[in-house]
Length: 430
Image (cartoon, rainbow, N blue to C red; front, side, top):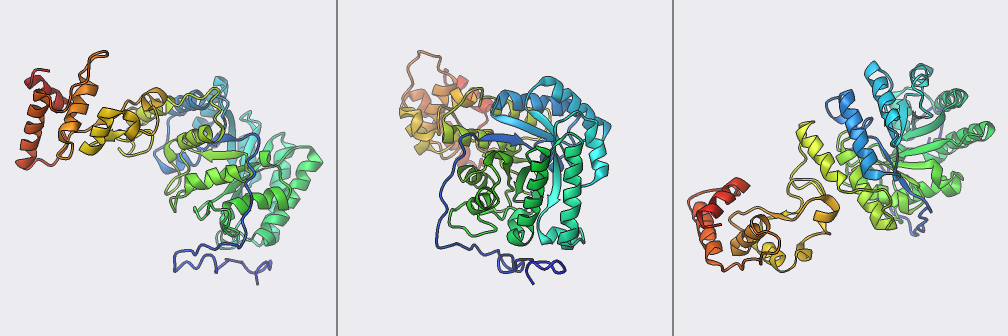
């Protein structure tokens, strides 16, 4: 009974629930359609806020300043709740700073619109559940009821002088022809009548999206984006992708959305978000640079400052191996890698991390570091600019290495801290 108004279409071929969802592919591929202009939007204070302890107003303002410094004109918008006095104070203070445009989020209810209306923002996101899982199993509404309710709220948002951004929740599990198409056509008509473009956030709420151009609907991100741009006629600049990382594809799905016609990519700082999180905003910045080569106003060194803020102020250190920002993301312990670094750091570094991230290469000395690892630690931590590097067969390097090996032979199981290495170096005339 797919598409019937009185029965949900749960797409059981795609989502059997008792098994891992099968990946389905079509015989053909869709073509890349990278928009002329792409950008990033932020959900650190909305979806990201739902995954951690509440931010204080001061913390929101601090993080907002870091977003502005990191992305410049690239990060165009952020979104905040508007329910509490603290929410509204944060909105007011962030708007006064003049960084990314501050927008809000609301449920599809007129009561929520009243809360948003007094904030002074020009755009609000609206929760518009798209799948029958949400409509029938959660909200207990038929499609026709939901469509009329959504249209009424979007019309009220436009009437209030706000731009509507419809968050199509659970879109990768939705009946596209049976519900999404008539809904979007109705909302587009409302926008045309009012002369206000309606935006659509394409929400991969459970991370089901697949990034490959052969992947079938509703999960195939390239086809899903082009379902909107080509089948429904929605311009790229009115589309925004919002991913989740439940299947480890949050970031790559978002890049796929860019490449196949979606102008805006939504992410959160360090990927904080519901369950497994959202695409990391800082990763989107790096991928934007890789796709476009344009770096006007972008300062990637702010990624390191933001990581320090999470660690020192929010008391939320990132995993050591977290890309671009973890304490050990460009730190090696392997002697064979250290030997390569002694010859040329490009061999084992992704790019000039000292220049682009304020993060010089590092090494942790342990039982696998070898003479090369000890030599690299000494040369990077103790040698002044202009001094020649010491070879790994320098007697002092050999002596430190012998002590390191001796401690592991005696049962040590941890790496050597910087203070321990400094003590060993001092003992051997450094």
